[in-house]
Length: 142
Length: 203
Image (tube, rainbow over all chains, first blue to last red; front, top):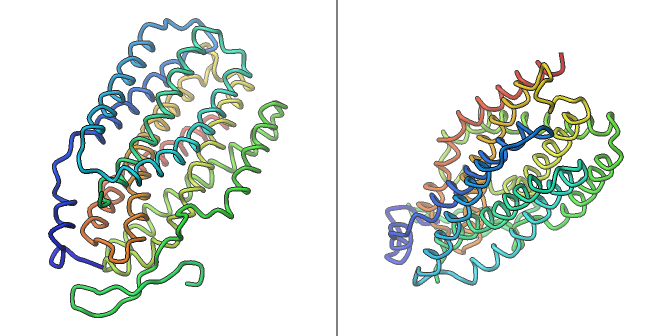
């Protein structure tokens, strides 16, 4: 195993590389989804004013989209590793999001609230795999 | 020591040392059918809306999740922090792939059953006397979810990929594993808060 003293120049470059704030954007997106989820979960089955939840969902989607755009600009990048992790993680998180969606549908959650919840689950299912795949790929050689 | 391949790597002092390496698939494939069975049984429990089945999944999943978090954070974590990087890797490379399956399954199991249980017991109604405690549990679980999914799980996976390299980069692993040390306190506090809330709800 290499240590800081025995790093090759390529390994040191991987470690010290300046990259866009993709991790921060993805975590902020996740935090917004969690806030929106708590807001909705605390109010259903009663009446839920949807504007704050829609606002939070929109902001989270924008942050994840910005992370995706910034990610595409990184050169060089271990895209093959990224794709491999992303696809499998997406599959796993679609199953998890699907289970949560199933519970809300089974409970007869009203249409508009359900739509916002499904939107949040969709952003969640895209955001986490992006974060996982990026964190792995950034330390791999392209 | 038998379930993971070992590779020979050079340490800083030039000595040859064995390093446990995660399997080529990273996630142990033999565990996937077990996860599938657990999730299918939970879907059936939710569809049937039986109190005992929901209680079972919520209590068993929650107890295992909390116990694992507290044990790893406050018992194993401090021990690992005092070991050399090599020893730390030897130890963590073995449970880490399994944790990639265990933790998301336990979390999904606990939260999905817990939500249904709260609905079944009418704790979700804003007028219910325990509604405030339920919302408090949402907030604590939300914080734990951001830490687990946003900070720890990506680091866990990246460390496993690093360990698969013929010459793992110790500096990368040390940097990623620092996240576990920084977040152990918050995770521990969150889990203790969950214990307080859940015992209050059950009383």
